[in-house]
Image (cartoon, rainbow, N blue to C red; front, side, top):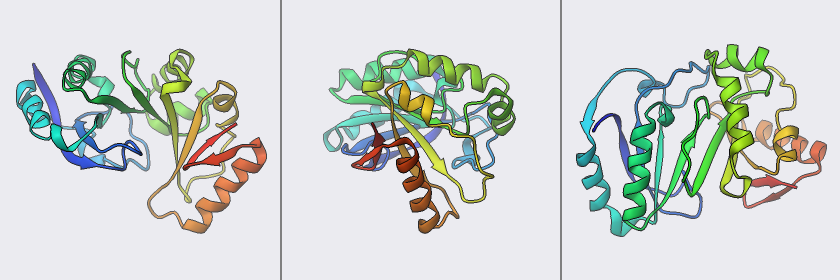
Length: 212
């Protein structure tokens, strides 16, 4: 199997808090978000044989407890995601997926990190992401995912205009939310934003995660 591959981090403690993770980055994403963190791997092609990637993961197995699949948008290569899921489990690793949810999310992951981009309004979400399929797929994924194994993430950008509350429906569905500070966003702005969400929705903050 050929993989449109962007690279890897052999050891990360950030992508899956509490786990030492090997992170695989898959190239390609249909969205064009204004604050894309991995813009350089959004387009282009670099084909690598799956077996080569699998052997790289195997070589790092003793140092990690989890495999995280990221991108780009990894679910644009669903067959690769499933093969990595199978391989990670065969090595005794927990397997997580970092995704925007802009396409259907394969089942079977131990943890899904779903990155919400803006308010959950179709008239806003699709233009913001530049992808006319994003909103419907995000909503369908939220309806299907298990809140017990899913963490919703939202990156706070100081330069963004005020948003319609995207968090209430997500909290009502039972999900937890991790707010992340975007590039060029001050700590004061981020702290005030997070405190406002906590106050408005009557949430509690536990180990960096907002929940009821």
